[in-house]
Length: 255
Image (cartoon, rainbow, N blue to C red):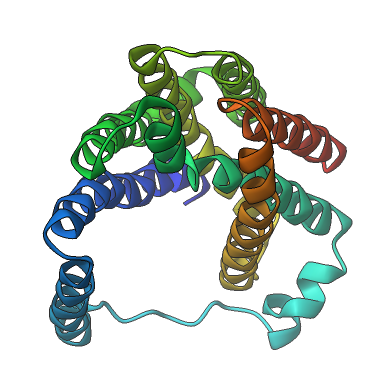
């Protein structure tokens, strides 16, 4: 139901956050033993999860309505949905441009080893998990539009501060706060997209993933040279800040 979308997406996002919180440090610890160990663990875990999904995944009912109401034509004929998906793409470009280089920043500028990076990412992931699990309480008080604005502006302010910080504890704390805001705002963005989707909710979810991974690819490609040629996290932080503000403008335009 529409009233439960934000809370439900928050739980789903919390799963992603917990996976990040546990998986990244675990991968770092395994990599300290051997780079092969992480891939062996991923392969074994994937086999187990695949078996569980085959046995336990619930039956998914087909949405009511004609195929025209659920396919790509319905999505791309809606200006609101197209602009919202573009906004989501831009947001994730900045988001993953930054996220992809947290570890590199910790290593280059603070000389953390693999284990230290894992611990730092554990703290950052904990912030994301808390935002995902409990952010819906603020959303229910503020409403989706206001929550979207507050969340994106808070993340923008966080990266503005990250761009100039040279202190490791401050940097880790800021990243944890930024990711908490991300965990809070991500379900709101998905609820915004789903609220405009009509019967095409599955198609919109698929396109949202395309936008996210497209943003991840482009963001990381742009962020690499920026990180190499700028001091501290200034280049990538500025990229994330600019992307978030553009995304916020596009979400506003999609109303």
